[in-house]
Amino acid sequence: MKHLSSLLAAGGLLLALAAPAQQKKRAAAPAPPKRYTIEQFMSTTRLSGRAFSPDEEQVLFSSNQTGVFNLYTVPAEGGPATPLSTSTKESFYAVSYLPDGRILYRHDQGGDENFHLYLREADGAERDLTPGPKLRAEFLAWRRDNKAFYALTNERDPKYLDVYRYEVPSLQRTLLFRNEQGFEPAAVSDDERWVALQKSATSLDSDVYLYNVATKALKSVSSHQGSVRNDPMAFDPSNQYLYATTDEGSEFNYVVRYPLAGGPRQSVEQAKWDVVYTDFSRTGQYRITMFNEDGRTSIRLYDAVSGRPVELPAPPSGTITGVSFSPSDMRLAYYVNGDRSPSDLYVYNFATRRTTRLTQTLNPAISADDLVDSKTIRYKSFDGLDIPALLYTPLGAKPGKAKLPAVVEVHGGPGGQSVPTYNALSQYLANNGYVVLRVNNRGSSGYGKTFFAADDRKHGREPLWDCLAAKKYLASLGYVDTTRVAILGGSYGGYMTLAALAFAPQRFAAGVDIFGVSNWVRTLQSIPPYWESQRQALYQEIGDPTTELERLKATSPLFHADKIERPLLVIQGANDPRVIRPESDDIVAAVKKKGGAVEYVVFEDEGHGFAKRANEQRAYESTLNFLNKYLQPVN
Image 1 (cartoon, helix red, strand yellow):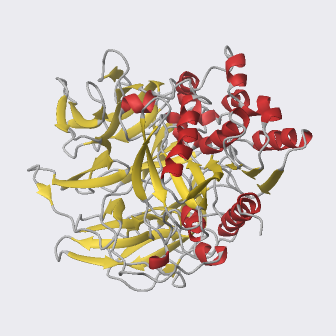
Image 2 (spheres, rainbow, N blue to C red):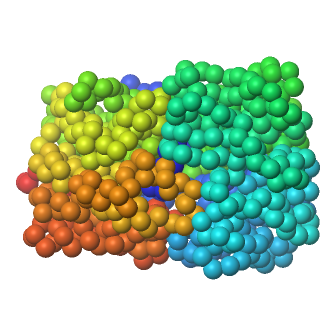
């Protein structure tokens, strides 16, 4: 995935991938769908994280049931969840248990993304394991013997993340890798001889390095010609190989491994779609690989010794995501997510082959039968290129009936991807009579590296033209009023909204920009310091603000705001570190200056996305009210 996707991915809009599965069929001749309020939609619960307790009897996770994310545990065999935290301000995100039952979690301050790693003591007290102002910390992994874990922090140098080992139970800390050349740490071998690192030249070209902890020597193991993406993944349990992915000689990423003792790279696993992840279970009994198959993730599980496939149960509906093994590898925790079913937590017991559902996240007041399944479609762009997209059609819509308004939604990234998982905003709009087309314009991930690279240095042009071409497809459906089509997006999708209104001012009836870039010069100059390792890749993708000012201004909507003539809604988090508030302040002021119709909603306690349910509810309600104001016919 392009590094810029991590910089500009819209929280809540750029979602995790999901695996293929058939949704349950509805009964024939269904009754007209019930219309639900935004309060009912937002009463659906969001979950994140999953980790087994040392005795494997409990599963730790985070839930926004109270309005912000807090920590909960639930019995692995089913039962009521127990809250462990009662935060009302910051969202707490579950990480892991320690072997003695203490808990690791993380949170930032008001969405500033300066996450710290915290320990919940046995008495419930909070201990900051990574203290310091303007510091960012990340949990990396456990050592397989559970006697140490690894974390990353940029406390020594704000630009780079170093690797630290934390001994358990003392939590005494040791610097394992001092990062001074812009590497991205990926994994540590269980014998602590090696640290796997990635070094990116561009979003399409990167190398895998091995760092010898004892000698402090660095060596590249992925030498290649031309642009090849190489991503380190995991060391095998025997400390003989480093597993990685590469797209060398292929459109798609596949699994390879490098012998740590030296020797040629070995191919392990390949398919017709991208491998997005491969890793080993806690004891090393299993290896799991995830493939992105046309926006859906397929999961393959193998016996790590024999290489034989291990069958997993098919989910009851939706698709499997977010997999975690228990300490003994006897249980597997995962989420199941579908178009009409938000993520719910399940546990599979390998010994009994029994699956247990642990949560029920869809608001009981909402019937899944009133929600819609997305349909994966493709349409031709201006140059004949096939553009993948997800179509959400309100129930009962068909040619010959009254034509409906529509929304073209653009994902974050630019290297992100809209995928067929539960999307609250799309369901809310469809439930209120809007056709939604979530476009995967050129530059989106998951469709091969040629498609992925097709937007490089073309932003504001070809990728935008893919979105403009979506209107022709919507017209072909026979039930869309193409005079009432809006464009909407978050982060990079917000930029695309602004670009559409500025560079094709009469093509869409209105636009909704959710924390989107208006000025590429400023955004590229103000990236958080811990993205320093990705700076050159960003410049290669978008442009270099030190040498290409005129080109970046030409593609920045702020410098063309005088051309915007259609209504605009702008939504912004005041603490956003990726797309800072002036990006939205300035475009709003520019549109107002020329007398344009613009509405502005700012959340003082949010960053790049929505961590608080009340804010997300207000944003979506504001979006629907805005669209109704400008897209619905006057009675």
